[in-house]
Image (cartoon, rainbow, N blue to C red; front, side, top):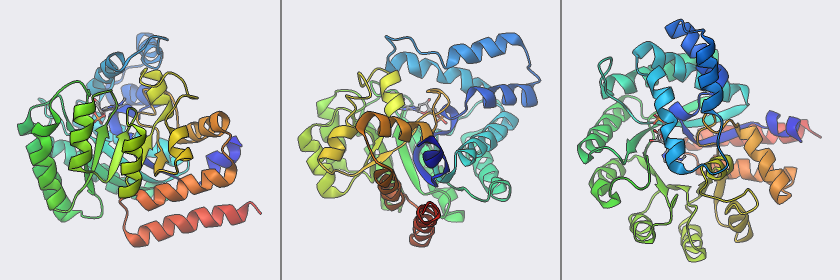
Length: 338
Ligand code: 6MZ
């Protein structure tokens, strides 16, 4: 089953750039860009992927600081982006929607940040021709609304020159921080100008906010952990898929076990869903591994894995032609097995 899942031309729709650096890549980055080969750094990497049993979302958000430090220079960010693309390509991801929060520090401005990531994606096309990468700039809900507005303005600016690359806006960050309605103006502008919206929704149990988010609408829903059966029905009627990230949800304590994961109820009610990694580095996973978990936990068959992949193709923000090509790759893969 592992070989079948590994070789399947998969589609990753929910991956945060800085969360997707695994420990090997972090060590590679530390060594190549900062000349750091210390044992102390290896220990930090081991601690980075170690989750206590009683872990929670707050503890998991603390982990991002470790990676953000390594990507706080132009060279670090550039190499990190390349490593993440390489690692997804090595996991046979044929299509990747990468999201990341543009940051500003003494080394770069938010515009530079996006430029570096976009240029690296473009340059990587030659080196990794089997993976098609799109970008969704993220709004971090912990940051002021003015930053969200700047992020949307930059996304729209870059989408003008690279419409096939910058395809949407993500709303993420610590779910207890910020007020969703404060960001609606920026999100609405992005949507009116043609960008798709992916919103981290119901990652914690906050019924008033969940209601606001569902009535605002989105193209895809990140996590959806605390959605009710009624909400699922609403998502199904609107054809909005839930991006299911099993390891992330269990390790961050928002779901108590794989068996309890809402993917089960989504499959039972035939509501749209896609399987994703979220932060494959932080949570020490891969899309192959997430599929294996789905197979082992819910007795999902090979055919159902193929269907889940085709569902992800359908809900991707790729062009019609790109989606056809992706589906064809899946079809070729299926035929190659017979
Ligand atoms: C909400 C998350 C997240 O943007 O620096 N992020 N936001 N829920 C999650 N579930 C665990 N995982 C990651 O990637 C890291 C950032 O993505 C968001 C957080 O804002 C985190 O700092 P970038 O590339």
